[in-house]
Length: 104
Image 1 (tube, rainbow, N blue to C red):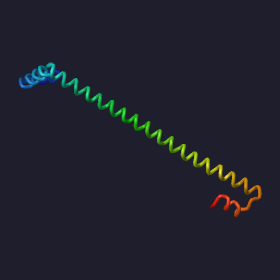
Image 2: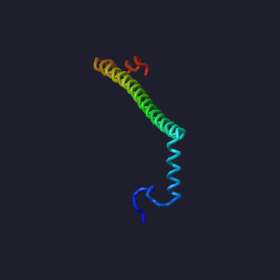
Image 3: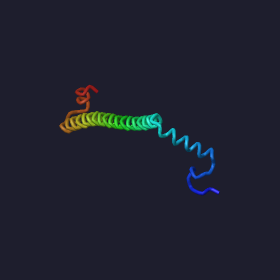
Image 4: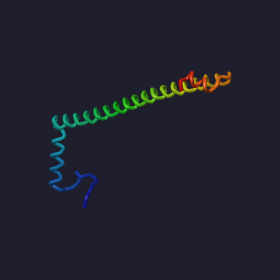
């Protein structure tokens, strides 16, 4: 029957030896350095991914703003031209004259 809840409580010699060997290895400076470097690499990777994501979002925002400005300017020019044409029509200028003026 198993007494406790931990693997260390098993009364199997091989398990006790394995646990002792594991504990002996994990306290060595070499193992701790490898574990530290592994954790540092994981953190560096996470940081690089977060930085790349921020850069991508910023680039997307800038591209969207630039495109929006260009579309807004184009729409503004079209609206201004329409207003000028409407104004000229209202002042009595014929469509033929407007076409010649605008070279359509």
